[in-house]
Image (tube, rainbow, N blue to C red; front, side):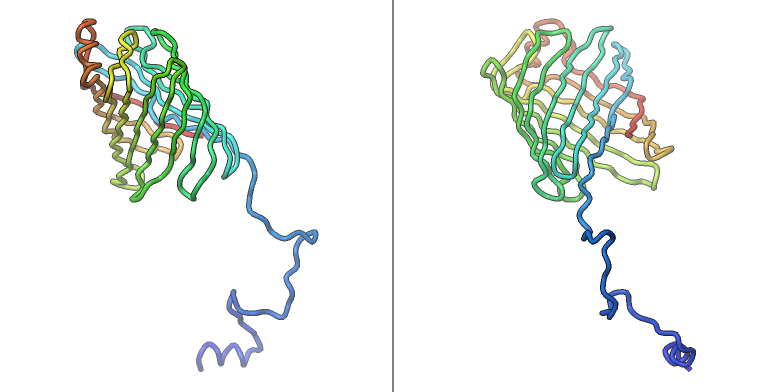
Length: 245
């Protein structure tokens, strides 16, 4: 005797989950179910690391946080480097974002370069999201209060070696239309920051890592920094923590 025959003989009636039912659907309080539009807060510290090299060491952070719904959010982004006890290459961004697809947001707002150099203020417009093959990408255009234009391209990718051990290549490029020697900025492709990080997720929200990183100036900016007797680029071994909440 098959399962259907046994069920029929026992008087038990089985029905597929999506089969039509004579019983009408009842909504709690008469309200139909709606999409979840609650507001949430999320923050992630992608880089919190010490970078070590024979010529000198520094400390770098790069993180962001947002508050809002699936469609509308307010973002705060921050990055910078402590070098020889001085804040270098620091900028903060306050952005509003609007989801334009399941994977991408359009962002607009302001950016302030605040560190040991002269302060610069920029208007920002860009996109951030998850591209094909799970690439995290950001592309932002800036216009400054002095009529300068700039852009920043960032990308990273997670290779899951195991469920907890993850290899992440990352790169950031900055481009400017005009030089700004007092901030060690050159026209064209000005500087790059890259890293290859191997992290182990002890918990999903806490992952120490080791890395090899390179940060340096390119083209005209490299000549500017060289003339100022600064360090034009450095390859460093890094140790850090990635965390989110």
